[in-house]
Length: 249
Image (cartoon, rainbow, N blue to C red; front, side):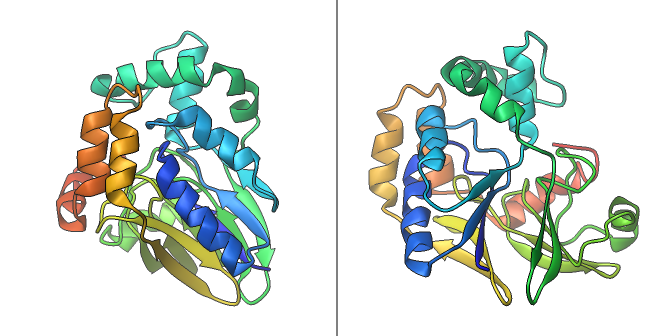
């Protein structure tokens, strides 16, 4: 079985489209979408593109889906920075027709993959969709987070940076971000087959930026410049995330 893990798409439809072309060429059997499909420039179009995929697709929710659902329910999203609230409000209005679909997504997905064993897919950590950890987080702090995990492999996202490490006896891989990488430009994702392959897909960044700037997304200019054409690097984001480790985004 060949599984593609796509995390943190964030409404970047051009990036998703390019990854799906590559996935189709590789003959993937299943796709796991690891949360934070939204917010981003093309939330409806991104969800609808995922619905048209011909191979089986399973989705779990991220912290942003939870925030959007809370907004739809008339509640102030928990754990969401106030400056991001307008983007959550805009997204909630845009994708209201998909509320039932998002509500049906799960926190984790478990799959047995031949050659890899039991694999648990989660957004941030197996216990919480908001917790932050990186390749540098002290293993002693992480062992309680993964203590009840019985899987051989945990696939996560949330911090938008690919890495692989061990926490106790558990192999942990971060799939990176399709739509908002904290790395060199492009789309990052994960292929699981007989092994684990960290993937990077190049796409037409200038065209994507033009499409995003032509959208009605409130943060369109910043998204195009900051997350497509010139994303923040790992060093910068490791410093940012070190201040919030295991306390949520």
